[in-house]
Amino acid sequence: MSALLAVNWEWELRGTLIVIISVAVLCGSIYLILGTNMGARLGFLVAFAGLAGWMFLMGAIWWSYGKGLLGPEASWKPVAGETVIRDPSKLYETGVVIAPFEPTGDFPADAAAASDAIQESGWTKLDPASPAFQQAGSSGTVFMEESGALAAGEFSVVGVYEKGGGRHPTFWDERIDFLAFWHDPHYALVEVAPLVPQRTEPGRAPARPVVDTSRSHEYVYMVRDPGAKRTPAAIITISSLIIFLILCWLLHRRDRHVRANLAAKALPAKA
Image 1 (cartoon, rainbow, N blue to C red):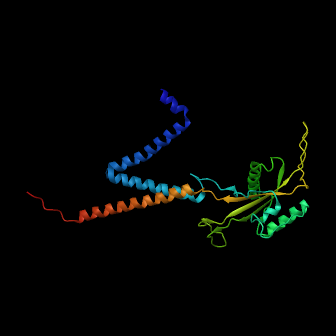
Image 2 (cartoon, rainbow, N blue to C red; image 1 turned 135 degrees about the horizontal axis):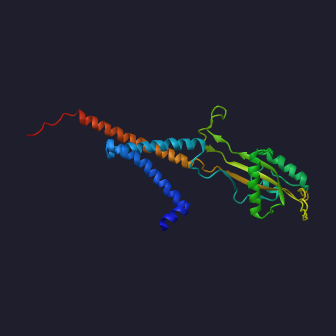
């Protein structure tokens, strides 16, 4: 009784038992039918080949559409040692801009000049309404808060730039990219502006954030981790195909042996 109650209340154990019983009943029933008609060994080969072929088709669908058993998603990662750039003059030292940039002390003008220098270095400024802007901006906000440079509510994302990220090989003006397994490094630069401290009063709506023009803008340097979303499906597909082909070869070799044995002359019976 205690074992039955444990199975009923422990959802992980219950789900594991359901999967094991379902697989055993499905595969076992098919093997039982084939084994009674073909024999134990031949029935096992046919049933196993059918299972491997079905796993290959399922894995191919998962691999194509990014469904089923998935690996880690793509995400933004901090560039080691160069994640938070607090001084715009360090943009050249970190490789963000190709020409040295010297601030003048006029922080709004320096921010505009830094934006121009970044775009002249091959970076593309993203539209604030684009999903890529929101995703990179959210990751940059997290990295800025984790670094301790600025706390939550003390800054605002004012710009996002990206560079690289191409995929190859592609065909027909990049319309066919099914075989684009190789990716160029994809970088993002999030520009944040410090805000003027606002005094909050009970019962009143918070004031709109105001950019502090007496402080320089800061930057968050990130690199894209492409993840491995389709890797489990690819492993299932390739391994299942290999097993399926091996089993088909074994069945074909058995058929050749059977035909050779049937075509051979019968040995004379001894008295």
